Image (cartoon, rainbow, N blue to C red; front, side):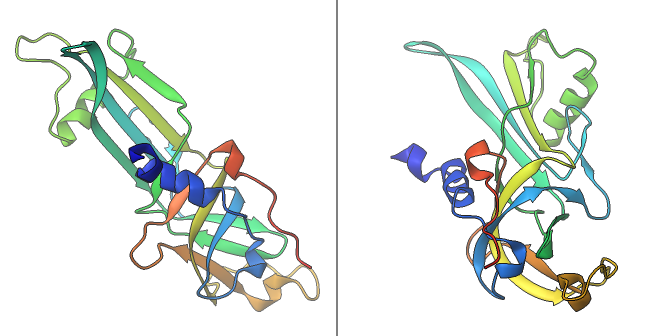
Length: 212
């Protein structure tokens, strides 16, 4: 039951809810939208790999002795996001992912003895969160790092509260009746009392509902 109610499980279930075309999301509705990420402003940097992205998460685990043998235990989990754009044929959305609850596929792993040229970045990340790579005797702890990131062009599903606003940076008009003439965009944020939820789970990425 604990796994069912975990934040990662909640984010997966929320993102798997039926995605909507942007133009069909009602003002003030909580909805899921899905599609490719486009940059809004500046990207952020994934702390271990240095990749430019709009969202990242890092989990640090340590191999510890237990009465039943050795097992991995998470000692640190962090994530960070920034705003990004999503556009389809019906509308344009700005997703405010600064404090999103994220579930991302593992795409980079670093383990003891296999840090390569990322030791400096790993040490800095650990120090920022009150941890060290080496133990009291100066030996490397048995740590493994899993980093995930959403890079521009990747597909994600997002669930949040949608509000329509005047687009301060509208796309040029291309055709009569296009949403671009309205110069509006959907801003997706966290609903009251809930986090904005974001996932790149392949089961969550489906084509948006078509406009009737």
